[in-house]
Image 1 (cartoon, rainbow over the protein chains, first blue to last red):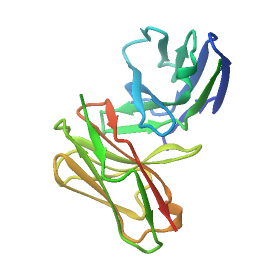
Image 2 (cartoon, rainbow over the protein chains, first blue to last red):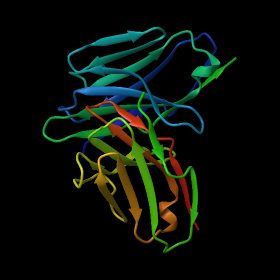
Image 3 (tube, rainbow over the protein chains, first blue to last red):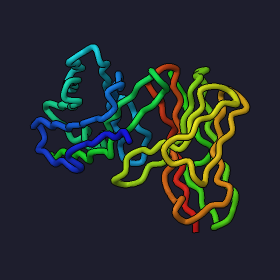
Length: 113
Length: 110
């Protein structure tokens, strides 16, 4: 069946460094790719998303890139801060031929001060 | 601002009990979802609903049922709770593709 693979499962960086999380999806009909941040004990919150007709999107220190041919998309966080420490989930969604969203397993990011 | 609420943050039930988890959203969203979150497995879809009284099975529906009698409310039912249903349960709603999550219910079945 369709799946989303997310790597790495754990990532530790020094404050100020960049962090990159990568996802690969299998459903070629996917057309929406959100990223969620979940802090300890809190709900997942959307931090950035990208649609299939766009290759890159940036919002301050966060950027997402999409390669539809390779079915890869990545989250880039620059100038990391301790408050970026959280679990990050990618997802691949489609709303054609039936609605479906599949989440990656998550990446636990630690930013060391 | 979208608000999705869940009836309980923590719940402890015994094996064999019937368990109801409630989710309410205040943004008139048509789509509502129930996920289960386990370490290393991400979020797995149990059921979703795209309209009142409509429901679709997700990836792991076994042992669960749902009810959507009103647009704003989506209930998850564990007919006979088992220890392997101990987990974090997250509800979400959406108008289109972007999903908004509730705070989660941590269910422990003993």
